[in-house]
Image: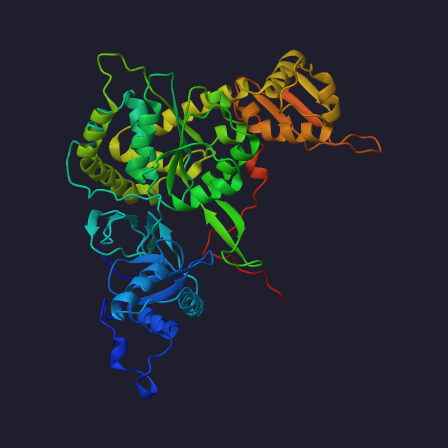
Length: 530
């Protein structure tokens, strides 16, 4: 396995070398250079400096783990250099102003180079292999390619760490790893196969990952199961978390973890539903840069999400289309185990489980480039991974996922009074046509108006647009492309029932939308210009 490439440090700087003491002389007349200058020289001897694509400066050891260390912060380079300075110059301690001046110089050095990719837990090697950071102090990583997987001493890609990360055990070869994982879970075989496919896809960094929703009544072990899933993909001392208060709190959580779980979700406010949707497909947050008043940084990320809930109807329409729902079965008293016993068993089998999952991932990477789907569902990249899992393991996870997704859409509709009212109107009228304002008048207003019930025509039109995919899943089509024939040219909504024998009737004719073009790299002959 090639473990070198762009971003790998090849310098041979001396690590932990003793610097001259204050009594050893240095400058003119034996006077030492300023402390800030000595700190900068010490740092440049042991580190190289880079800036990430989101504008954050990092230091990378020239001889050590291929890990990006932030210049500031509790676990940053500033603290390390303060200790190194005290060790190198006995009896002298670097002042806060000297450290601040040194950090400013090092940030400038980092900005002299083009931005580089700094990964969190998972990344892509230059040769296309998937690299998983074990999170250990020695910088070891697992490299997975179509030929298999192996543990390497130095990662071929640059990673960063966070306080929300915990080390991952070294995987081992064990032919019974998946069975050992299934023995810990109260789910049937189809659900378990979908879980395995989701876990494997979670390590593919450049595709959207549906949020895994563990659903079940009290006593089904949802929270413990979700915690185990997250600790397989991206171990953390806080694998389960409460719902964030606002978007800023969410961005801090998402920046520090590749995978995370929201526990005991009952209701999801609209802002959080939109935020989770963007995290599934790729989100960007613009924030003020640290220690500045006017500079900004852009945080861009896709994340692997899990949630636990009793009622899937809490999921809004957009989010319901981006989830993988797993039903957990009730655990009877004879099979219930203590949390301490579960933790001990999970820790014992986790290396074997990881080895088995990396085996499946290697098989998926081998066939994924050749996978073609007859039709592309909403989460198309994830669906291709499911098809690759089915091809290599002999399962049927894609069919089960598509069937479950339809059920999730129905559950989401049942939790939305406005969507139910539209469906009832179409059932009664067959086809309804009018403006958004007329739709509000035609729908019976609930005695107690729900919070998400539109209050005016503008909001009603927007809600219908967002509900269109869910309505389509139950056979109700939405057409908002027409205008009234009078001088006002109002936008019209046409709501109708699709024929039962033609489930694709609500979709436009794709042949009429896309012009025929030559495949990439096969340009057509230009017409004669003479």
